[in-house]
Length: 459
Image 1: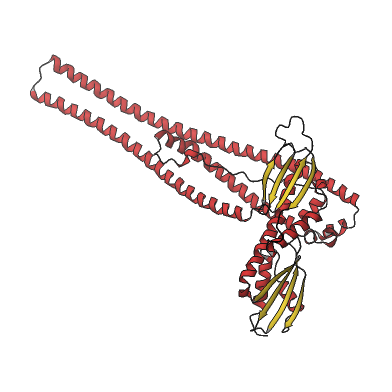
Image 2: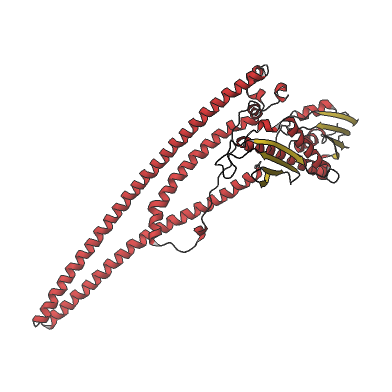
């Protein structure tokens, strides 16, 4: 019915044509347990950090930036799934709405073939990108190996030169020692020998000092790089925290699994007020854990556990809208014949549950703080919300009735207006609501726009 009326989204159109894309959750990396050890690094660890770990990290950072840019570009296309098909491709909608069920089925089959082709193409692209990444890592490793080899050769030359000096000094000392033991020398000559010996010790001290200076310079460079890496790590931790907050804010995974056995699986939604029971068919040979995507599903059953007598009106409204969506989809077993389609079902239901839950929170907000928007009363009747506005400064009092459905907040809400005092009617309300875009906190923004545009200035 939504398809014929032109209020179906692109994603729902794909679902109608049996074109499903499995939903994959992001995999997050976790730091090892010994990452936070604050012991000072050993020289060997510093060398590994400078020539192995940091060059690899730079390559991975460049690759991550490229992937992030690609994801940002693709998000624009992914968001199209939530837009109305008639707005995205009106000519396609006009043609497809006249097609028979058989023609729609054939069109969906062709789309699935295209999806399979693009899936294979994406795997090939991912493989080629990995080849490019590993080539960069290999090239970087070879470059660092060359730098390390050059530094080793320089150090070897310094050591050879120092050893040569020590050998020469040892020969001189041995020569003069032999002269002292076999000959009689005058006192001035003995003083000269002692002077040479002192110069030898001084040269050894200078060589040792040069080596210490060289090591200190290397250590200072490594410490500077280490401080820079620590600053980058702190910055990345802040970004990770910010991203985690965004993930938690826009996470639509509303289900919790309470049972998974050989015969069935049980999922809970909305604070355990809705239960989904999935009954499996016979197990497949070789499927030890019962998770083969081709395993058949016998039935899917939704059940409400909300106490209608004790629950607040907003909770009852949310429950009605969710089950309105569930019942509008017909036979769920046909949409989910095997385990392969179960993640898509959980995602679709979670999306509606998330939107309806936010709607309930909006209504509770308006019941508590509606006075700030000249809202006297909020009443709920079935799936309709009645909002009674009154403002003496605008000399107006009227009741706005909004009809809600399970596609909230992606579609505009039908409404009626009952004037009680003043001249504010459907024409004025319609002009204001036309400027309120659908989306997050749609109901709250409707109330706010009416308050700002109609109830502030005297009429």
